[in-house]
Structure formats: C-alpha cells, structure tokens
Image 1 (cartoon, rainbow, N blue to C red):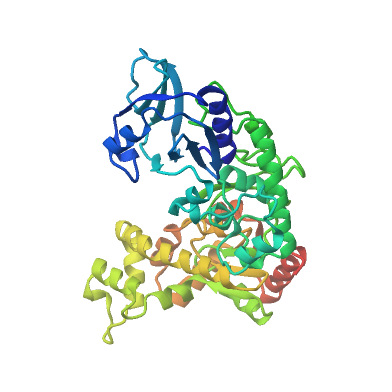
Image 2: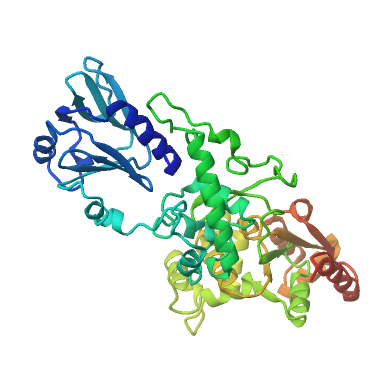
Length: 472
C-alpha cells in the first residue's frame, strides 16, 4: 500500500505533468470508485475544469480545480498513469481524464479499493471538513504537533504502540513500513502497550517519524511489492530501511538477528536487543509429567506472575461459557458429569485416544487460551511474566514469549510419575507421551533447560540460576 512518502512522490510528480491542464473529457469504467456522486454528476462537473493545485493530507491527494476539488485515496494498489490518447485501455484502468485533448490521465487500481470524492468547493478549510479528512490526526511533520499532544492521544490506550501508530486519527500518514522504522529509531518494542509510554517516548516517536518521513520523501518513497509511483519515478527508500523486511538479517546497530512477528494483525520487524520489551514473557513447557507444576509453584511462592494454561482452560470451560458450549456441541452430552460440568477425565481420554478429535478440540481451546494469555500480558503491570503451557510450541504460544524454559526428566521417571498421577497402565502412559512433541525436540527449541530428574533442591537451584541470568 502506498504510504505518505509514496503519495507525496505522486503529488510532486503530477504537479509537473498535469498542473494548468484542462479536463476536456471524462470516461468512467467502474463507477463504484466514486464515493459521493453519481457518474453523470462527476463527469459533467469536471469537464472544462483546470487543475490549479495538487495538495496532500496524509495518504489523501487533493486535486483542486477551478470550482471543484477531487479527493483521492489510492488504498492498496491505486496508481496514476499518463498515456497517449490512442493507447489501449488496460483491464484495471477504471477512470480516464482527457487533458487538453492531448493527454490521457488514467486511474489504475487492480483491487478496486481506491475512492474518489467530488466536492463543490476549493476552500481548504471546507475541504478538510469532509468526514474522511476531518477525523484524521496531525501529520508527524506538522510543526504544531507537540510531544504533549501526542502523549495525550496515546497514554490511555492499552493496545500495542504498533497498532496505535497505525491509527490515522493519532498520527496521520504513517503506515506499516514506517511505523516499524519509527519504533526501531525510538528504541520502542512494537508490542509495548501505549499506556506504558512516557512523554519522552512520545517525543522520540515524533522526532523519529519526522526523520523517517523526510528521508523517505527525499528518496521518492519505498518500492516494495506492487507499489511504484507509476509516473516514471521509483522509490529508493527501501535501500535505507533499517528493520522492515529485514527478518533474519543482523540488526544494523547491534548485530542481533531481526525478528518478524504479527503485531496488531500486521507483519512487524524489530530487534529484540535494541527494542527490548519492558515486559519479559518466559514460557514454561515440557512433556507430560516432567514436573512443570513444580517450577510454577516455586515461582508463585517467589511472587512472580504465572499464567497457567491448564488453570485458564478450567476457567474457560465452566458451565455455560463459550468454550463449554462449543465442546458440548462437538462432543455431545456424554462429555458432561452428573452436575452438567465437563468431565475432565472423559475429555482427557478423548484427547489422548482420538487424533482427529484432539485436533478439533484444540481448535476450540487453544485460540481461547492464547487470547486470554495475551490479554493478561497486556493489562498486567508486572515486568516479568511466566506462562506455563504444555503444548507451547505445538500450539504457537512461543510467539508470546521472549524466552522459553523446557522442563525435562529421564524417561523412566516420566513414566513412573504419569502412571502414578493419572492411574494409567504402562501402555497407556507411553501412548500419552507419544502423542506429544518429544522432550528432545522441545529442548532444542528452548532457551533454558531444567533437568527435573533429581531431588527438588537441584531443580530449584536451576530455576534460581535462570532468574539470576534474567536479572530478576
């Protein structure tokens, strides 16, 4: 999607090519692009109008004519072309202006998401009252935009700063590419809740935004995937990007490998070292009956916040809940005990004996638990959070974690614990262990490994060493 620098590049290029040219004809091939007028009104109003000025606000282009203004938003893939009158019409060219009976000025949009608005005014104040423009925030490079004003806009928002900066009502013109760059230059982790930022952070965001946008505009924008200016200008700012699109490459500052995650639904690039998350999330996992609860109970006694997936599941599937209803619908009333609650033993037997049904059950439970963990991480003021999830890697919960502890034990101890705890035969215990990712594979994926095969004092000693390494 073209962002502010790309739209500014289009504006500047068009200024040199269509300014002072008269519209002598208008052809509309897809009228849904017109947002507020019908095809006849749009066409009849614009014929014999001359382009007098081309402005921009955020990602909107403002074509100011003699008596009218066209507001254009390019959306995902909108582009402008200048062609000869006799050039063949492309499949995705939906609106064509003929200028001075000599030039074909065409709007091209593969996805047809772009919109054009016609206003019967050329007054800038009146133009800015159009609803789509009126709700927009200030641009970062607006000299009247102060750190105090930005702080006031963000300090009560609980969502990650990445999502807040993408909100055009907070800062107008920043898109996904430039928000990643701004967060990096501001040393802010994109997952940091906006209400945790200081007024100094707001100042850093403004200064970084101004610097990034100025450099990008000077470079003609960023040519990534489908975007070019379509007017003989190709952006070069992608050559100067610090983190965006740089996954698995070394950070230009510290050399740490750049990470890519989905934050607020958008692909997000950042450096864990240069952009540390003020909250550190440590995952705790391990195969069944390796002793995860021993670790979590010790951490709780030390005063740390521990989110236990098993406890969350119990809370989520209480009678009448959404998860409860989904499980009953899937498994039938046989899943319930005499009091109408979900029978955990029956559920466990299904999970460990029926692969197909286990996958369906997990599709109900895992997203709900993940959402609850994410919610608790976002709202807590704790700086260090542990989340205990048996299927942490299998269910993708490692995406929530900065580091992962894997609890392991020898096979015989694991079998003995499982048989005793769940009253299982040796054969049934082996089946349950085999249904999960192996201890070896989990250990390979983890940051820290705790061997829980010996006396508990040795286990606690290992936990304390990890806490020491975390500086906690």
